[in-house]
Image (cartoon, rainbow, N blue to C red; front, side, top):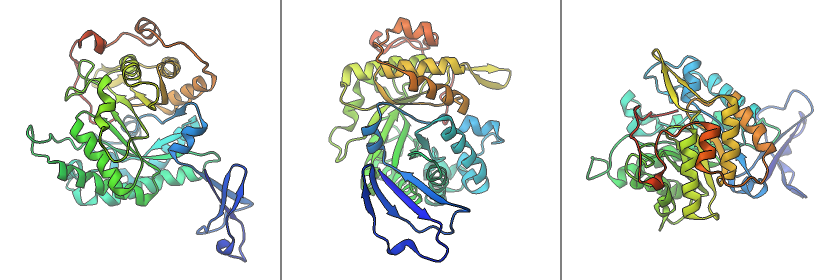
Length: 379
């Protein structure tokens, strides 16, 4: 864990002072563009690996897209453009999640790859948009009085790999690499690969992170009868990373169809892949429902607090929210995690009783009902 210490010294430059060790880490002198208004400014920065060593459970943030929609994002408008057009709104959401207790905040870069951005004639802006997004999240994290990890969100390209589609492995790695290089340049601590559905795309994103020299995590979306859209089962997630030069820091699930379903997915993962892996559960805020033309998520703060506790008992060490999850939900989850004990692993019946009915049958039952809503591209 590293601590940057910038004193208010208008008549001196701290660059000549060497770092010195303390009982809790390394205290380093850092140059700031301008001194703080008064007193001292201390910024704490840590890696995800270090934070996992010191905490039993970490809390990630909530939704990006659905919260932006409430703040003025228009239909079809790419959220990544807000990194340039409305940086204050991007930072405000990061700050709201930090204030709610998040240990990890995800950059506004879910669709920040050339394949997604070309839909808006912005494929050449992937690096710059990713860099700016990481800088905005970094500003918020560095101003916090506790360590907050900046995770560079890397979502899917939206393309199909050969032979089903035209996307090649080399093209996918190159696209992800440009985005990840921007995230690294902007100060991201870890690459957060999310909402993936195919082995090929997860591995392409992971290899891009490895080439850039960034640690990474990866989550898949098990949203089609207990499987990913391309047929991956939860109990096979560990095998996705076999043979890669660097293993993920954590793996798991995000998005999907609802909080109950992702908990069942988590049980399957931790049962099959063992307790040595670090598992992520970043579930939707209940189940989406149409109220007229508006999509409303069924999860209350009480439901999401229960979800957080059950996720710990199911084996997760990193827990957060996906679509529909507001800072208020994250605050309730923070309180639940602070109070969680050593609860026994829940049964499916307990999950349904506390969180709500499953949309899909458990994967162990050989699949279930197909989803009745279309897969969302972002949260």
